[in-house]
Length: 377
Image (tube, rainbow, N blue to C red; front, side, top):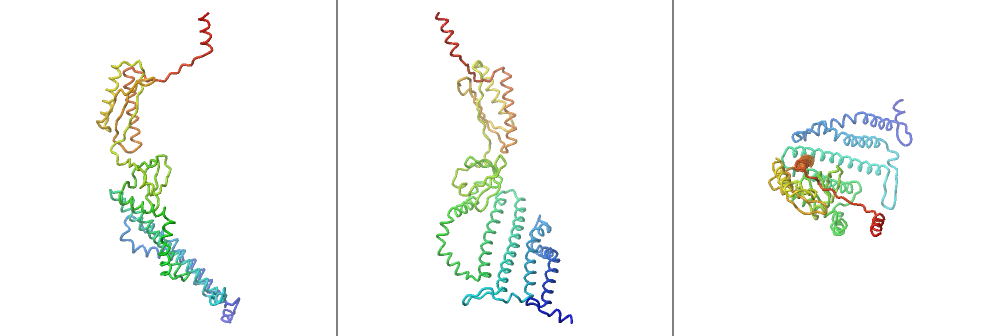
């Protein structure tokens, strides 16, 4: 009796078919997280030997969601195939081209499954890149730190291209060799359309080959000064001194004037000290000598200090100070600069000299006219 009830048809399918469909969906959704975790842990065994510094938990965190998504698609695809109606019904028919609901669903799920599989592959690429980044951080060279993100982006772009052709071939039944031949014919037009992108791509290769800078270098380009954070497939990210991020196309970095400030041995400082005109020449000489001696004795400066009576200004005697600090990091450099500035201030005050200040005299024309008239009278 129960068998007869299960074999009764409702909307084109037996009750047993609906029951199996429901059981597959419910059980599948209940165990999908456990199954995804188990598969991720199993897959980690293939990478354990090379995954120094990266834990299995991190690997699971990367893969559990995309694996779970793939399992969900497979669960629903398996469940839907337990029914016949309306899968066998014709959805579209035109001449020799006929497609049923079942064939359309097959195509949709095949597209989703391929997308999910490549999503897992992208997560594996991320994991491998993290492993190489960790190993690169253990070396003294910064070139490998710069190379890892670039290769990661390049690998992902190539994988996207492969994914595109796989979907065309398996889902849409496109003849891939014919498509590739067509790309050969339209390659020139495509290259012209993507001229700027290709130039930036070649610029990225030039950066890796010539190595004008590496990640972490302080550079100045097009009046932009900052630290290189990442060299990408198309552009380079620079963290400015204001802590903002500026993205420059690689072509501009190669074609433009780039100053790698990190490669400098010293930072140069040049400025004038303006002293009052009533400063005696003997005091002026002693101030210049003391400033030069003070700067040369500082442990972070070299012996190329120049302190000279440079010019007669409009309202001051100008003493030029030029020296070099062996410090690339900005914060320590600013502290040293401040320390020397205080020492210069103390030297000027010790010799009882005065800094020149521009003075403007305001003349009352009407008052001068009255005074002149009184004088004539």
